[in-house]
Image (cartoon, rainbow, N blue to C red; front, top):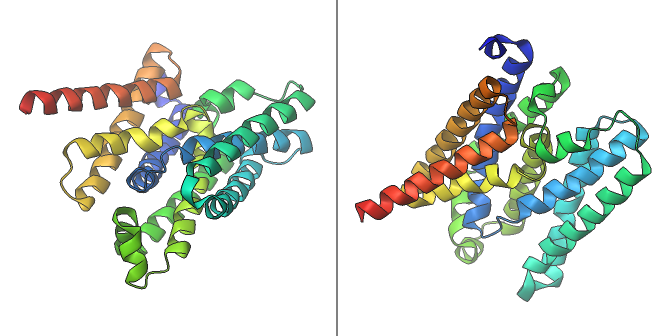
Length: 266
């Protein structure tokens, strides 16, 4: 149990708690808009940025963030080009991100690159700069959601009605995508590129099981994510397990329990 009082574990806990607020919050908007796969796409593109960061000697998460933002704008452009097949934009960008990441990582094989850490998460290696970046992104997301909660609600449930009412849907769609890119970029070091989508979507899936209002859904996704993050980190620390994988498996277990409870109640 000594690990629970270690400085690196406390940093991991702080970073995990912050991401436990923003990731499921943005994931809820994505799920309601049927864009849940965008999380996988942006995380894979971010990995390409991380690889380039190692090669050019720049803070990897910052470069990954730039790549994710660029991918966000590219997805929006492709969605307009393929209006009847909008999911093509996600598939195309994801394929390009994976291909570019593999090429960049193959160019640099130095001992400083921890590819596995960015794929599956390395939350125990969070430093002050990582926490500062995560804190800034958390603040930006919370402020944006608090200021535009009503608009985000309308766009998430009925985008056509929102457009007819005069709401600038393009602006808010882009805002959601940009905020999601920010969250995914800083989440990679916590749960990893291959698992970050779970932190975006599974809490939302849990809330859809029993939440009866949009406000209740917002509270539910955050509570479920925080239980999984804190519980997963403690379990991983005590039993020497992979933190990212433990968090995701705990989320899945919670979803299965909720589905079982609803079935029995019905």
